[in-house]
Amino acid sequence: MKIEITLHGSKYVVEREKFEAETAFDDFLNLLFIAGVEVEDLQKIIETGKIKQNHKKDESKRIQNSSHL
Image (cartoon, rainbow, N blue to C red; front, side, top):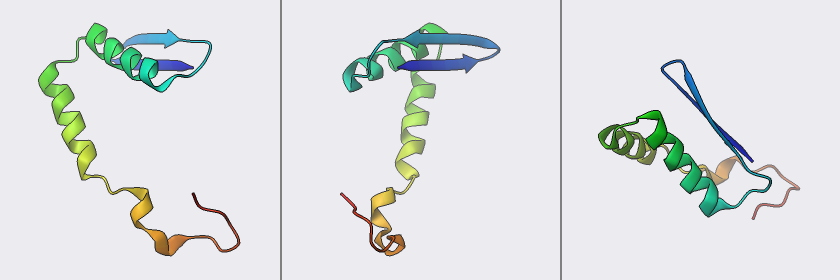
């Protein structure tokens, strides 16, 4: 797993041999902290994400003869 953040011309990277969701989330937050992202900016990013629609809500676009979990 590789997480890379480029901010203001600087690149911040963390790599792990395998993916674990909790570790990936911690790594992502740590990279944001190291990159100098302010807590207020992070809150704005999170709030903006809530506006996006969930892809599961649009069930009318199902492809026939396929399995949906």
